[in-house]
Length: 134
Image 1 (cartoon, rainbow, N blue to C red):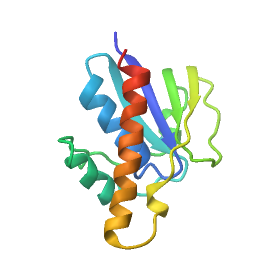
Image 2: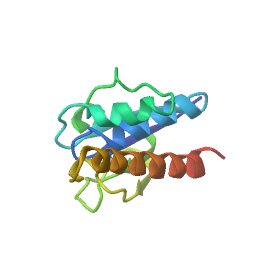
Image 3: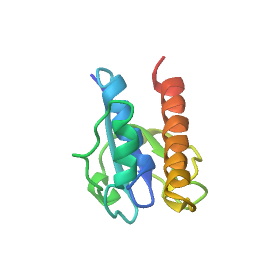
Image 4: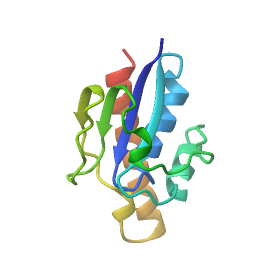
């Protein structure tokens, strides 16, 4: 039976979507990945772009409200709120808080903004490999 992992964040637009897509693509044989936000917006197109760069499409994923998972048992809830406030999730075996900078707040030239998304993607994927790739 696959372990269930829920990545939560503020908008479920970039970091959580990257994490969901990467875990599913890389370790989907062992984990069921999903993501949600406290105030969901829409999938950030730059998040989809940087995932395409590593051969993983997340363009079909959509932002979901955290309330959709109320009462749903999870093995892991991973809060990617970058110092923001993320709620407790009582239906989980383990809650993890991991602080990745929000690439959506990056400023500067388009190349600098895209570089911020790549840095977030790379940090998230390295963390996932370390935590779930064992």
